[in-house]
Image (cartoon, rainbow, N blue to C red; front, side, top):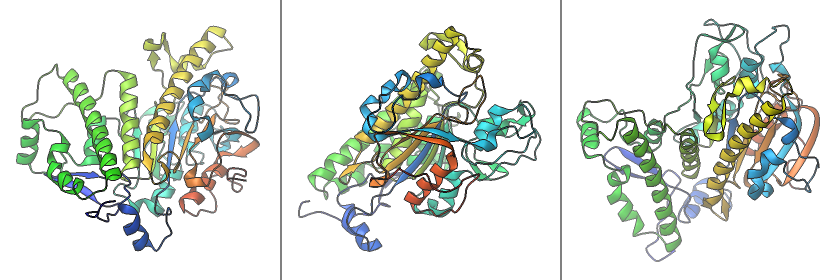
Length: 455
């Protein structure tokens, strides 16, 4: 730090014309935050949790490592995670038994998603009387969500539904929402990267006057233009390390903004919208780019401490999306009912690898974000998985579950841990403990999951 250094807090933002850009962790924040909290050095860096969901299960023979412990080899489906092997725990033998029929017969897809984070057996109905449970992300948000501008983020690729019949008499709400505020209230996810960007950084926000919104649209200016003066003043007061970090961070914001603008221009054939015309959706036609934009924004939200809790759905449960850009023109759900057909198995592997590659992309973004003496990934706990194991069997035991990150040093990754018919909810309780959220039970939990921490 130089002689003009300042002390900042995690609530410091760059402002201008209704935009507000939260800042990443800076060296200048450490002293002020520690003094305010009466905490020792290092303890001011927050921990985060996120839950990423893939539908229709996976091809388990190519998912599960043959070896347990630290000397395990990643199977083909998980190959993209090799650079993050020491930041990863593969968890075998975890289950969500309340996703089982329990006399309700069909509807495993709806139950698998509705139960995945709630641990609750959903009421079988396609009417307005939906009922599941409070999801674990919202349990955390209820206790610590007030510490950040957004208590939680619910993100995805396919839109949420709140009504209709989607799976053997189950409401579409069950198969399209992973996060539940209460047992009757699912949290609709944001799928539009343009709207998510606005929500995170305040550009074109709904509270601005019509004249100001029109002025912004007319000029088509970057959100960074609105905060440029504030950024310039702060820049002059920071040490060299913090100046470099600010430049990198704002550069990443601008790059995402450019990609959203590119998608928007594609949507409208390069026409610039005039004031009064609704802003185009900003959802890229390229599926991979859509996923990566949403994951980039989740990573930035964590880096800037806009939120510490997130969920992301690669697709709604029972999704029959085709993947022609991978050479798979067949629907995903149709393929998951493989009947042990080797050709279908290979296509499922291809889809599974694609999703894992996007997970690896998120981990690379989080690992590149320096924070204190570590990275945002080291201070996070990221779950990746599905509420179905094998799509043909529709079973909810031995689920495909990964846990990435070190939870601020409270988790020892780089291992494959095997369990025997153990509730997935035990993992969630262990994660909440590390977030400072104390909960006695969740779903069918029987305690905490052993063996996660350093020996």
